Each structure stands twice: as C-alpha cells, then as structure tokens.
Image (tube, rainbow, N blue to C red; front, side, top):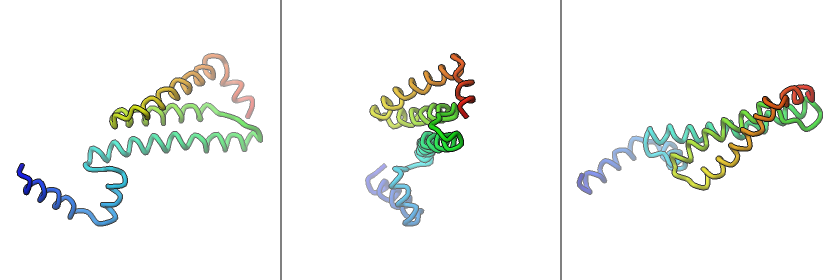
Length: 126
C-alpha cells in the first residue's frame, strides 16, 4: 500500500464517524471491531470487580455489621479473571501481576468458605 493510499484509507475511516464517536473511540483506544470486543471484556471485568463493593455494602447494611458474603469473593474472582484476560491481551505486566496476586487471595477465601464450613458461618452472621 502506498503512503497516499494509506492516507486515503485512514481519512475514509475517519469520515465515517461523527465527532462524538471519534472522541469515544479515541478515549477507549478502539481502532477496530476486535479491539472494541477486548475493551468490552475489560470494562465488564472492571464493572464486576467494582460491583462487589455494592454487594458487600448491602449485606453489611442488612446485618447491621461488617459482612463479606460469598458473592463478594465470586465477583472479585470473576472480575479479576476478565481483567487478567484483558491485561494479557494488552501485554500489560503491571495489570497481570496485580490481578494474579488478587486471584490467589480470592480463590483461597472461597476455599475457606466452602471447604472449611465457612459458608454456614457467613450465613449465620446474616
């Protein structure tokens, strides 16, 4: 592809989107449909991971004490897994290491809940 043909292709792609679409695509670093799919995976992971705090807050409000329900750990594990996949795709070593260490902790806490009879203790505290 010649430089002029490349420039024309980029301009044609640029002209297909409105200003707000171009700003959104640039902000989310989306350059193709495949990239958009990966960004959706990352955003879903972040929403799931952050949503665990709402679950914990609601459970604590219901119990009138600090409670961490099993759903908190499942959401942490699911969100961390999606974020890990996203960071591997991005080749982001910092994100991979951050999620890998958390993943071990979330798995261990779920092990304690389900294997060590902790599920009954959590249910009794509600």
